[in-house]
Amino acid sequence: MIDSGLRDRAGRHVTLRPVDDDNWRAVADVAPRDDQRAHVPALAARYLVLTMRSDVWTSLAVYADETVVGHVMWGVDDDGSRWIGGMVIDATEQDRGIGRAAVRTLADWLAAQDGGHPVRLSYHPDNAPAAALYRSIGFTPTGTVEDDEVVAELRRG
Image 1 (cartoon, helix red, strand yellow):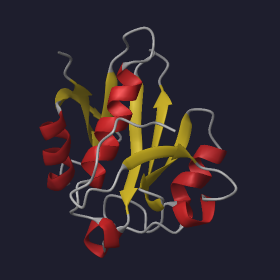
Image 2: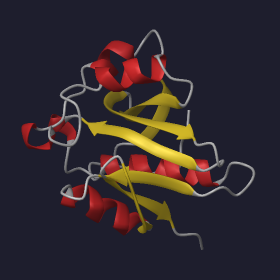
Image 3: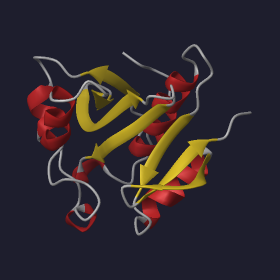
Image 4: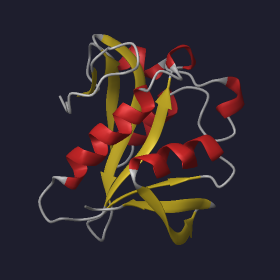
């Protein structure tokens, strides 16, 4: 479990946990709002398949207290940089600070890994809510675009 002690606006404890035999179905069923489907898949199941078929990504379940409310994944690039990807918070759980807590928790955990490698993520330039969220946490665009997405890096210090 990855736990930074953060809570959502309802006071629920937000943690990141491995996807396992007990929670994978709940994670697979996580679905964003309809207006977000231009930027994320209709179900988190697509990200679970990606992590099963890739050596790069690791999926995590996002919990609020003991309820699965989302998915996020992380990976390590060839240059050692740590990446956050594939975040989906269930439509019924959005606007409660869960996404913010999940990104901060994972970013802090990745930044604490040995080597001091940068923590990065990417988002579509039209995804203004994602850009605002990541900027508010301390991610700044690097000037690089990868697969039509803006690459941003966590500022240190």
